Amino acid sequence: MASYTRGTTVTFSNTWVDTVGDPIVPFNSSYPQVVIYDPAGAIAASGIAIQSTTPGTWKWEWTVPGGATLGEGWKIGWTLLDLNKETFNYDLEFEVADQLQVQTALDRDASYITTCGGNERLIFKSLVQLEELDLIIRFNDTEWATFTKDQLTEVFAEGLWHYYRNSPTLADTGTYLVIWRGRETTVSPLDQSIQYLRVAPDQFWVNLPYLRGLLDKLGKVQDTPLSYTNSELYQYMERGLDFVNGVNPLTGLTVGTIPPPLVSWWILASGWWGLQARQLLEIDIEHEFGGQLVNLNYERSSKLGEIISRWQDLIREELAKTKKEMFIRSSSMGMVSVRPYRNTYNNRVYRTGVSNDPVATFPGILNRLGLSDY
Image 1 (tube, helix red, strand yellow):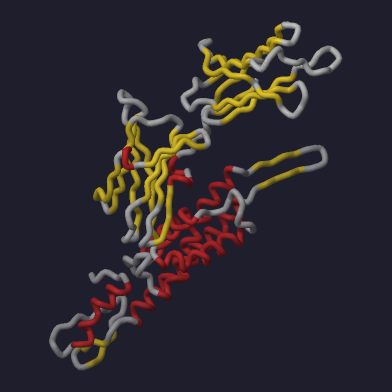
Image 2 (spheres, rainbow, N blue to C red; image 1 turned 30 degrees about the horizontal axis):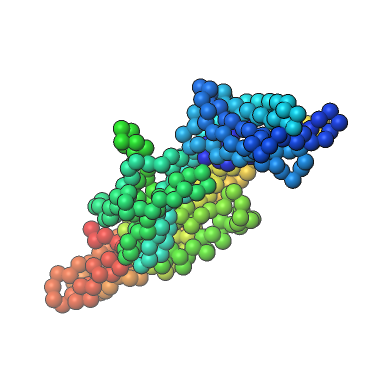
């Protein structure tokens, strides 16, 4: 049984020929007639088929409604009256399936990423036309912008209702929460959909090619189902920065304040996060086949696991040394008794008098490095 998806346009066709293979000519332009019946037996659509380039073959297009009843029981009925007023009927049953829905967390269309200072077109797609729809943008736990349905543009295309609006100027970097709230009808419950608008600082865009190049060494080809979008890479770089900050000595660096000596470690830690996601995908597509002459085994997750483990050990061991050395080199000279004493990770000297002026710059150095003074 044929299956057609909600929101898609289907082309039905049927061929009428006589016993010797010659095309049957309709009585007039009102034939062939086509009728679509839903599972309840009601007429969902009707029309007149048009002749195709093949003699005797007729076709008719129908867009499956977004709210069409799911399942079997659908039927298309063809009726042809020939020149001799003989009637020919043909019925075909089919089913209607729902569109493949991807979870928001995995939906690449649910995330936007752009540069600072511009704006972004925010889009919401629906299978049915909505009675109510509000767009709310939140930033730093506050309501940043709000738009009602009459402030949105509504377009029907590709079997879906599209609602969109350009955001205001994005002057601050960070992640904006895009909330769509709407109802199908006045009495429908309120439905909510969440999207993410990420405004990345220049530091991200400058280092993005290095991270992509690092990951693509394993993927071999960039344009594959395993490729990474910019929005996904931004998430990996945020998590990679958390990794860097979590290695002792603890730091509070951000994408815009990470110092040059730690950039390579940041990229490596971000790649480590990317490989974690890649390994989960590889586990999902592993397969093994055995035949009389050929044995096929596709398994790469264990190799990725080895790389991930080596990267993690390298980052934790060597990055700690780098951060401690940076701490030591950035410290100032203080005075203990009559001897100069250098600030180190284990020994800090704080100003105790006006004669200890060089140490006064110590808190500022810590702030520039993202190190909390405690």
